[in-house]
Length: 296
Image 1 (tube, one colour):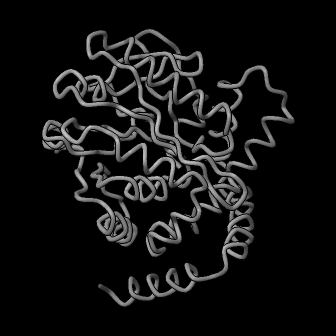
Image 2: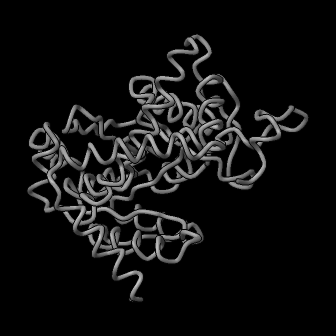
């Protein structure tokens, strides 16, 4: 570990032990700074919100937009809790922990479980929360910044059995075949090769095939796992999806629908800054203005 990495770890460790209310206060301030500073990401988020919620007024869109950046700031401290907080502390933050723990204990031990989750600001806390209910593995792309990548790896290795990279998709599938539980986020544009266009908020969006393939090849059970923020605590949801592994478009549309339902109830608790609709069907015009497609 370099001196810089050690200093960053030490600083984050100190921040992690601050009182929760102070953490959220600082997180909200940080979110406002993000909102004011990251113009390109703010405008991508605004465009996505306007397209996905065409019936909402400009005032409503602006409110959701600002709150989503505030949630992004708060999520820094949620990440720290995911990394350093004890199981006991996190269990107390999940108001329905005991009920959901009983439900998870009753799940079949012989069938694989694919736990789908979303790109919410606190996705690392979601992964950590899932590990409180059952042993889990996951998949993550390496980060371009080495220090950030090392931090994420150190965090995720603490509470997962294994972290697969995207090139190890067949190994993840084998994990499901032997009854393991794996986390997977299907709500991004991963490119044309392994995706098909399926409706998402009324627009065609490239949707990754893997959940359908996992169901068809391993007969795993598929769930949507999420954390719904309630003040300073959370309600955890583990909703089984009724997919058949026969009709790909039908299965993927069902997944997108369930994700839409969660986002519609919690629009501020989603990362709108991704270009979810970047790739388009052949012959269709760009979803985004050119200035939002340029890197930056």
